[in-house]
Length: 192
Image 1: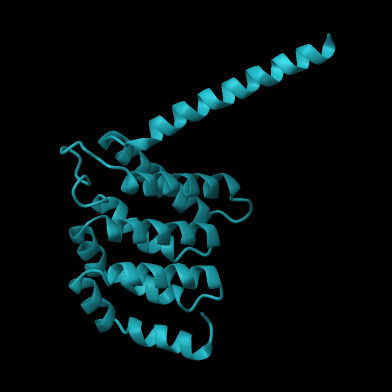
Image 2 (image 1 turned 90 degrees about the vertical axis):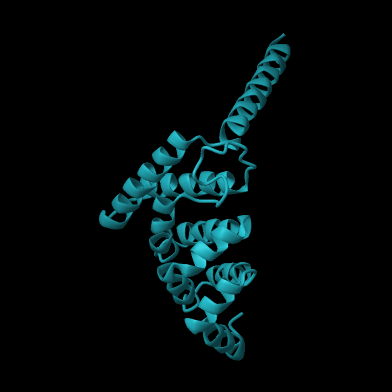
Protein backbone atom coordinates (compact mmCIF):
# COMPACT_ATOMS: atom_id res chain seq x y z
CA UNK A 1 0.00 0.00 0.00
CA UNK A 2 2.71 2.46 1.01
CA UNK A 3 4.81 1.51 -2.00
CA UNK A 4 1.94 2.17 -4.43
CA UNK A 5 1.54 5.66 -2.94
CA UNK A 6 5.23 6.36 -3.49
CA UNK A 7 4.95 5.23 -7.10
CA UNK A 8 1.98 7.54 -7.71
CA UNK A 9 3.86 10.47 -6.19
CA UNK A 10 6.87 9.77 -8.39
CA UNK A 11 4.68 9.61 -11.50
CA UNK A 12 3.04 12.90 -10.59
CA UNK A 13 6.36 14.59 -9.94
CA UNK A 14 7.75 13.30 -13.26
CA UNK A 15 4.66 14.59 -15.09
CA UNK A 16 4.94 17.97 -13.35
CA UNK A 17 8.62 18.27 -14.22
CA UNK A 18 8.07 17.42 -17.88
CA UNK A 19 5.19 19.90 -18.05
CA UNK A 20 7.37 22.64 -16.53
CA UNK A 21 10.16 21.86 -19.01
CA UNK A 22 7.78 22.20 -21.96
CA UNK A 23 6.49 25.54 -20.69
CA UNK A 24 9.93 27.01 -20.04
CA UNK A 25 11.43 25.81 -23.31
CA UNK A 26 8.60 27.25 -25.36
CA UNK A 27 8.70 30.51 -23.41
CA UNK A 28 12.43 30.97 -23.89
CA UNK A 29 12.44 29.97 -27.55
CA UNK A 30 11.44 33.42 -28.74
CA UNK A 31 11.97 36.81 -27.18
CA UNK A 32 9.82 39.82 -27.78
CA UNK A 33 11.13 43.36 -27.86
CA UNK A 34 9.92 43.98 -24.30
CA UNK A 35 11.80 40.87 -23.18
CA UNK A 36 15.01 42.18 -24.72
CA UNK A 37 14.60 45.50 -22.94
CA UNK A 38 13.97 43.68 -19.68
CA UNK A 39 16.92 41.39 -20.31
CA UNK A 40 19.20 44.38 -20.92
CA UNK A 41 17.98 46.09 -17.74
CA UNK A 42 18.43 42.98 -15.63
CA UNK A 43 21.85 42.31 -17.09
CA UNK A 44 23.01 45.87 -16.48
CA UNK A 45 21.73 45.93 -12.90
CA UNK A 46 23.14 42.50 -12.03
CA UNK A 47 26.51 43.32 -13.58
CA UNK A 48 26.81 46.55 -11.65
CA UNK A 49 25.88 44.85 -8.38
CA UNK A 50 28.18 41.88 -8.96
CA UNK A 51 31.15 44.15 -9.71
CA UNK A 52 30.46 46.66 -6.92
CA UNK A 53 29.59 44.52 -3.93
CA UNK A 54 32.31 42.83 -1.90
CA UNK A 55 31.36 39.53 -0.38
CA UNK A 56 28.87 36.96 -1.67
CA UNK A 57 27.60 37.79 -5.15
CA UNK A 58 26.03 34.48 -6.02
CA UNK A 59 22.56 35.93 -6.58
CA UNK A 60 23.84 38.58 -8.96
CA UNK A 61 26.17 36.20 -10.78
CA UNK A 62 23.48 33.60 -11.27
CA UNK A 63 21.21 36.29 -12.71
CA UNK A 64 23.97 37.48 -15.08
CA UNK A 65 24.57 33.90 -16.23
CA UNK A 66 20.87 33.28 -16.70
CA UNK A 67 20.51 36.47 -18.77
CA UNK A 68 23.51 35.54 -20.91
CA UNK A 69 22.16 32.05 -21.56
CA UNK A 70 18.82 33.52 -22.53
CA UNK A 71 20.54 36.06 -24.76
CA UNK A 72 22.47 33.29 -26.50
CA UNK A 73 19.22 31.39 -27.05
CA UNK A 74 17.69 34.54 -28.48
CA UNK A 75 20.51 34.87 -30.98
CA UNK A 76 20.23 31.20 -31.91
CA UNK A 77 16.47 31.22 -32.27
CA UNK A 78 14.90 31.79 -35.64
CA UNK A 79 13.19 35.15 -35.25
CA UNK A 80 10.46 35.68 -37.75
CA UNK A 81 9.12 38.93 -36.36
CA UNK A 82 10.42 41.73 -38.60
CA UNK A 83 9.56 44.42 -36.04
CA UNK A 84 12.37 43.32 -33.77
CA UNK A 85 15.52 45.39 -34.21
CA UNK A 86 17.66 42.31 -33.83
CA UNK A 87 15.78 40.01 -36.20
CA UNK A 88 18.10 40.85 -39.06
CA UNK A 89 21.30 41.58 -37.20
CA UNK A 90 21.40 39.46 -34.03
CA UNK A 91 21.69 41.77 -31.02
CA UNK A 92 20.43 45.24 -30.16
CA UNK A 93 23.05 47.96 -29.71
CA UNK A 94 22.51 48.41 -25.93
CA UNK A 95 23.30 44.75 -25.35
CA UNK A 96 26.37 45.03 -27.58
CA UNK A 97 27.61 47.87 -25.40
CA UNK A 98 27.67 45.53 -22.38
CA UNK A 99 29.67 42.78 -24.08
CA UNK A 100 33.15 44.30 -23.50
CA UNK A 101 32.44 44.49 -19.76
CA UNK A 102 31.11 40.94 -19.76
CA UNK A 103 34.02 39.36 -21.62
CA UNK A 104 36.51 41.18 -19.38
CA UNK A 105 34.72 40.00 -16.24
CA UNK A 106 36.85 38.54 -13.49
CA UNK A 107 34.30 35.75 -13.12
CA UNK A 108 35.22 32.84 -15.38
CA UNK A 109 31.68 31.62 -16.08
CA UNK A 110 30.41 35.09 -16.92
CA UNK A 111 33.30 35.81 -19.29
CA UNK A 112 32.92 32.41 -20.94
CA UNK A 113 29.19 32.89 -21.51
CA UNK A 114 29.85 36.39 -22.82
CA UNK A 115 32.33 35.00 -25.33
CA UNK A 116 29.74 32.42 -26.42
CA UNK A 117 27.21 35.20 -27.03
CA UNK A 118 29.75 37.21 -29.05
CA UNK A 119 30.69 34.18 -31.16
CA UNK A 120 27.09 33.18 -31.75
CA UNK A 121 26.13 36.71 -32.74
CA UNK A 122 29.15 36.97 -35.06
CA UNK A 123 27.93 33.93 -36.94
CA UNK A 124 24.28 35.06 -36.98
CA UNK A 125 24.68 37.43 -39.93
CA UNK A 126 27.31 39.28 -41.89
CA UNK A 127 25.98 42.62 -40.62
CA UNK A 128 26.22 41.50 -37.00
CA UNK A 129 29.71 40.14 -37.60
CA UNK A 130 30.82 43.48 -39.00
CA UNK A 131 29.14 45.40 -36.19
CA UNK A 132 31.02 43.34 -33.60
CA UNK A 133 34.30 43.66 -35.51
CA UNK A 134 33.90 47.44 -35.75
CA UNK A 135 33.47 47.69 -31.97
CA UNK A 136 37.06 48.27 -30.86
CA UNK A 137 36.20 47.56 -27.21
CA UNK A 138 34.99 44.05 -28.03
CA UNK A 139 38.06 43.33 -30.17
CA UNK A 140 40.43 44.66 -27.49
CA UNK A 141 38.51 42.58 -24.94
CA UNK A 142 39.14 39.47 -27.03
CA UNK A 143 42.85 40.23 -27.13
CA UNK A 144 42.82 40.93 -23.39
CA UNK A 145 41.20 37.53 -22.75
CA UNK A 146 44.10 35.85 -24.56
CA UNK A 147 46.35 36.96 -21.68
CA UNK A 148 44.09 35.21 -19.17
CA UNK A 149 45.42 32.29 -17.17
CA UNK A 150 42.30 30.26 -18.00
CA UNK A 151 42.68 27.86 -20.90
CA UNK A 152 38.90 27.75 -21.28
CA UNK A 153 38.73 31.50 -21.84
CA UNK A 154 41.66 31.48 -24.25
CA UNK A 155 40.02 28.75 -26.30
CA UNK A 156 36.70 30.61 -26.33
CA UNK A 157 38.42 33.85 -27.41
CA UNK A 158 40.21 32.02 -30.24
CA UNK A 159 36.89 30.57 -31.33
CA UNK A 160 35.29 34.03 -31.40
CA UNK A 161 38.21 35.37 -33.42
CA UNK A 162 37.71 32.59 -35.95
CA UNK A 163 34.02 33.49 -36.10
CA UNK A 164 34.89 37.13 -36.73
CA UNK A 165 37.26 36.10 -39.52
CA UNK A 166 34.28 34.94 -41.57
CA UNK A 167 33.89 38.55 -42.79
CA UNK A 168 36.49 40.71 -44.49
CA UNK A 169 35.83 43.54 -42.01
CA UNK A 170 36.44 41.14 -39.14
CA UNK A 171 39.72 39.96 -40.63
CA UNK A 172 40.88 43.54 -41.22
CA UNK A 173 40.02 44.68 -37.70
CA UNK A 174 41.68 41.68 -36.08
CA UNK A 175 44.84 42.29 -38.12
CA UNK A 176 44.81 46.00 -37.32
CA UNK A 177 44.47 45.33 -33.59
CA UNK A 178 47.44 42.91 -33.51
CA UNK A 179 45.26 39.92 -32.63
CA UNK A 180 47.33 37.74 -34.95
CA UNK A 181 50.50 38.52 -33.02
CA UNK A 182 48.77 37.67 -29.75
CA UNK A 183 47.58 34.35 -31.16
CA UNK A 184 51.02 33.53 -32.53
CA UNK A 185 52.66 34.27 -29.18
CA UNK A 186 50.20 31.91 -27.48
CA UNK A 187 50.94 29.20 -29.99
CA UNK A 188 54.70 29.79 -29.69
CA UNK A 189 54.55 29.53 -25.90
CA UNK A 190 52.43 26.37 -26.12
CA UNK A 191 49.60 27.91 -24.13
CA UNK A 192 46.86 26.68 -26.47
